[in-house]
Image (tube, rainbow, N blue to C red):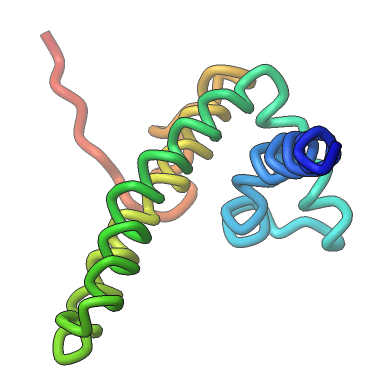
Length: 127
């Protein structure tokens, strides 16, 4: 009975976490009017792609958190915690890539247009 109850608590929690996987990117890159708007934007972008967000989170957990926990348990990582955190920060950028992937797939977002808005003119190869 407890396991069944945990499933009804755990599975919706994972679905909600996957729906809000790109909230930070939405806040930073789109400047929504409020936090509720950012949550709604993330939920809309991940609609139909929550499985992709789940797999990305699972891969990141496997690559970052699990080895860190094991190393911490062995107290090997303590002198190298800055390196571990740096690697974790680099791998977490995968969610930014997920954000742009979702925008391109769902909205036809033009990355070249974004680069022009940011003042980063990108030369294109002409045939």
